[in-house]
Length: 396
Image 1: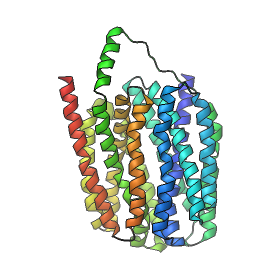
Image 2: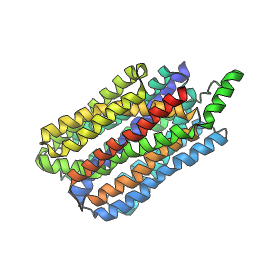
Image 3: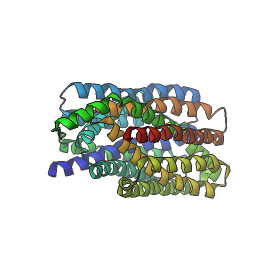
Image 4: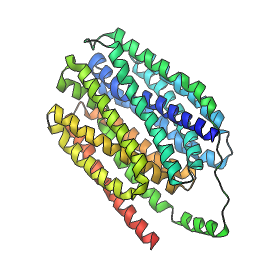
């Protein structure tokens, strides 16, 4: 039990640190790049393609973990060091796109390795629905806190002048100081062995399941790819919102982002409590439908309604993430390679849609970019419907 509690702390802080890096890179650096530095967006898009390709280390490492008995604690510790070093250096080099890209690559590669090691431990130790939801909740709540803290930093370091380089540098420094404890906390991690004892009938049943395992994995992979197509608006969104509400109202934008994060946390908490009591596939269908429709409508409303709609969408998002995570664990059958195969389509979506959104932001309106993401959300319901049909037929 003590080992489990220590691991939950590591799950929380690892996801906290990596998501804090994510918020810096994908929420505030877009404002810094587009509003302060006015970088060439085409060059930035190419840098993003290179940097985000580091995420492909995840599936390769997952295969290695399944083939070898790896000391995951050592992997967690060294990857935590890589996350901290990479984050520190890419913030120091943020004004030099090539160097920024190189150290962002290091940060993302180390973060990917950290995720694979931790997810391997989570998958092996998630033996029932309660444990799955607890692990999913701790990781997602860690992510939420990682998203909240940078917004709090903004209030301490920024005044009315968004163009103050001193304030930006102080903001970067606070981020670096916040993730340094990751190295120490990673020392707490303990490998947990999955319970593998089975009756002969269980073994036969699992072998039969393995023969058809690729069907739900393919459908889940397609769902994940379409769901994370929303990353197409990741870089254009914040500068666009800031331009609509006004540069001199930067703090209002920060408050709005903070509220959205809290609403997402609320969605995660509620989902972690109630989802296992209901059909997870039905929950995904309802939430994706609501999410997609609101996303298509939101960019054409006034700024207040826009944030209200995005707030509702964040609650939907919490339910979607928790239930996708639980289904990924189910279909992985305790194999990290299956889990990471599905997660690879998040990587593919990231490598494609983040640079694409950055590039398109200089060609088309941000409203249209957001609509594209909304349409992808609605299309993602299709693989879920097939997954529901497949599950019913399998049970019959």
